[in-house]
Each structure stands twice: as structure tokens, then as C-alpha cells.
Amino acid sequence: MATRYPLYSVLALALAISIWIGLRRIAWDAAYQTVGLVIPAQELSSSLSDDELRDSLARMRAQGVVALSVELSNLPDWGLERTDFSDTVARVLHAAQAVGLGIAFVVDSDQQEMPSFTLRPDVVIPISEHGSVVPSWMITDFRDAMLGILEFSEPSGLRALYEWGWRNFVRVHAIKSRELDRLELEGALARWERAVQERTIRLLWVTEHHRFPQYLERLSRRLTRLGMELGQPSAPTPFENSYLVYLAIGAGFVSLIVLVLMNFSQLPVIVLLLVGVIGVGALALLGGWDFERARQALALMIAVLAPWLLLFVAREKVSGWKLLVAVSLSASGAGLGIAALLSDLSYFLKITEFRGVKLALIAPSALIVLTELWRWRERGWSKLTAQLRRGAWLVPAVGLGALVLVLERSGNLPAIPVARWEELIRERLEDWLTARPRFKEFFVGHPALVLWRREQTLSQLGLLALGALGQASIINTFVHLHTPLALSLWRTLNGLVLGLFIGLVLRGALGGVTRWRRHS
Image (cartoon, rainbow, N blue to C red; front, side, top):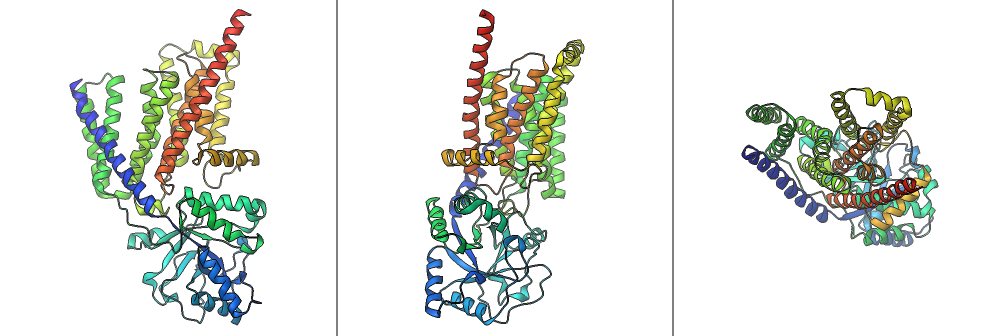
């Protein structure tokens, strides 16, 4: 037992560092709360007199508009065409500058032309979905410019610019024309609100603002209710990670693996400790050789193995709601470790992303199934084949279908889109709980763990695999580094409480049905 104390100490140190970095991230999120709006210049009416135009622009500025956009390329998805730099457009832009508004360029990587008038040095430049970083000759003083990253359309060149030392980035959200047709005003307002609250969006490119009455006024009110300040977004405060943090979290993860092996392996303790030392040494060498790839690899290993290891150990000691709570809290700790490992500005701005989300979602379930089947092998396969003959083959068939569904539904652009009824449920959950819990947790994985019993049947194996999916989803919540950490914690807690409630209700109902059948 004494040999385990150093391992527990290293694991506790890794968790403490993760919590400390998490608190720093929460403070960073709280300080980065200024949101600005950008309006297309060609949407301003050319029939307004100079005084009326200035008054209209001044009202927009009071509602949070910081710049007028100029499109240097065709953007059909937003219903916009390349701006013609006529006298009318130049008049609007000069009037905007006179009331303190900037000019935001939406550019294409092939664009080689530039308007003839002089630009202010504090210009804001969103990047189009086909765009790249704007060349320095396009602006009077490029050093003070802020580069916008249009969400879901991040150009590949941003990472190189970040490594070069650029930090004046801001995340931009836009709603395409066809989506605006479907959402209408209330849906669009909710979409803007979620983008700001959940994904560190700090610049909203509000196209077709003339379509709805009081569009800008209502949008600015909703942003203010979120606690946001309307105005020019600043460059985010630097937040860099270190090699020592990577090494401490890696050592904690290796300690977890060694502790699990001590419980379930017949290898001598000295051999297991030697394995741990070699593992930490390998992580140290890999991090010294290529820090970014090393921490990505370590984050993926934690995401894949931690839910499986935690569930594998905990199900031997507890069951029911105690199993769910114990494993979920431990998985949240692992998620905090990944968040600490990847915490720096490039991940917050989604210039760099965690790689392997789909693998991390399905691998824990696959590992728990393979582990259980390996243990069944020791007792022979007769019981399993008997279950299959009685129709239990439906369990793996349904499980495989669920696996395909999870893969196709994951990501920002899923192959199987979300149904309208599910969108309505999500919206209600967001209204009631602020941070909407994930269906994979509260509706599937968590109730499955509450219902699981220690029986060697395919149905119970299926419940255990679904439970592993819920734990993988918890960690998946924390690998979205562009989401404020406090919101991820709140989302996880909501999912745990709601999933625990549903699981206990189902367990009580099934117990009642079982008792009724026995007495009937």
C-alpha cells in the first residue's frame, strides 16, 4: 500500500494544477466580455441625406455597431455581392468614419484590388470562408489591425500567423441568408446569443439587418442581458501553456494507469513502477522534441483511455447512482486535465483544435466491450452463445447502429442533421438551464449506468457501453476549448443531475414492473 502513496500524490498534483489553470481560464473568460457588431455598408440606404445618414450611423454605434463591412469578393451564401466602390459607397464609409465607426474588410485570398480612399489604422478585418490573412500592403498600418476568424470557415494560414507572433484575433459569427429565412427574428437572436455565450464569439457580422424591425436594438439588449459590454472587441489577453504543465499532467495520467495495473495485473510492483518511470520519460522526450504534437497526443490518450479505466475500476466497487456519480466526477477531473493541457490562446480562438473527437467518443465504449468479452472468455462462451440463440444478437446490432449514429451526428457539420423537434427541445433546455446538457449524457449514458447490474448478459454489457459513451461525452465537453470553462462545468453538472434523475425514475419503474410480474 505504501508504494501507492507517491502515485496518488502525483495524481493529486496533476489535478491541483488542472484546477488552478481552470480558475485562471474562468478569470480570462470573465475579462473578455466586449462584443461588437458589423453591418454591411451596402445595406445603408443611399437615399438618406448626409445628416440622416450620420444620425442613423450614430444610432447604430450606440447599439454596439463598431464597423461597416466592405466585401471584396462574391459571397452568395450570405446573399451579398462584391462591393462596387462607387461614390455612394464611399460617401457611406466616410460618414461612418466621421461618427467613429471603423471599416471591416471581408476579403478573398485571390483578391488583388484595393479601394482608393485612405483607411484608419484601427480597422477590423473579418476573414471570409475562402479567405486568408490580409496582406500588409492593403492597410495603412497593419500592425494595429485586428484579424477576424469567421466561425466554421477558419483559413489554414492562421496557425502560421499565430506561431509568427500575431495575437490580434477575434472570432466572428455570421448567419447565412438561407439560414436567416428559416430562423426568422427570434431564432436569429437566439443563434447570436448562443454564439456569444457558448463559443467566445466577440464580433457579429449582422447581414440583412433591414429585414426585421428593431433587429439591432433587440440584439443589443439580449447581449447586454448576458453581461456583455457593447463596443470594439480588444485583442484577447495572452494565455500561454508551458512544458512543465504538460509534464505534470502526463505524469498524473501515467500514475493513474499504474494504479489500475496494480489492481488488475499480476506483474510485480517494481516492474509496474519501472513502466511508469519509462512512460513519464517518454512523454518528457516527446514534449521536448515537439511540444504541440506531444500535448495533442497526450490529450487524445487521456480522452480515449480515461473513461474506460475509470469505469473499469469503479464498476468493481460500486453500482447504481453511486457508480454514475463516482465515474462522472472522475471523468470531469480528466476533462479538466485535458483543458489545462491545451489551454492557450490558439485553442480559445479555435486557431488550433483538439484532434480525434470522434475517436474519443467511441473508443471508451469499444474498449469496455472488448474488456468484458475478454473476461467472459475465462468462463467459456457457452452462456454467450445461448443468449445469442435466444435473440440477444439484437443488442450488438442496436449498439452498432447507435455507434454509427453518434459518429454521423458529431461535429459542427453532421451528416445527419438535427431534427426540428430536437432543436425545440434544445432551445427549451437552454432557456431553463442556461447550459444545455448533452443528450448522450443525460438521456442515454447516465441512465444506462444507473440501470446497469453485475450480470453476464449482453443487455447489461450494452448498458455498460452506453454508460462509457456518456463519460466520453463529458470529456468531449472539455475539449471544446473555445467554450467558456464555467459553461462546460455547468453543462456537465446539469447533465449529471438530469441523467441521475431519469435513471432513478427508470430504475424505480422497472423495479415496480418486476415486482408486479412476480405477484401476478
